[in-house]
Length: 121
Image 1 (cartoon, rainbow, N blue to C red):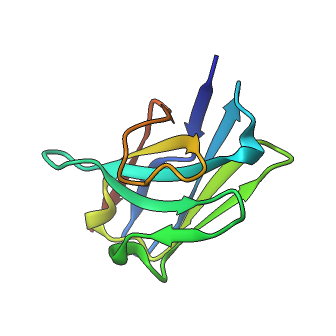
Image 2: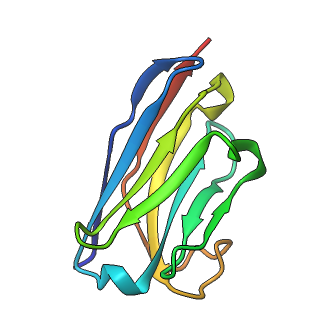
């Protein structure tokens, strides 16, 4: 059974930082692409950042230069370092795993339950 467990969310002031973690089990982590998505209230879920099996990364324009995704295959964990946070980053952040090559726009794959990130102004 696939499990993706996010942690690290919380309340932070604008300009602050948070580091999200997603621990995966029940999958062959090293052959799965991993992504972070977010969904703000009243909005559609969107890709924040993704990392492929070979380490190639993809970021939403709104977070480029502020967020960094990384993966540790030895720990079956993917991270999202978020710096210079702004109120518009407030959302529930979800971790996702998918077979390498499945488009980031696809809802296929496995999903975590999400972790709330709230940025106050």
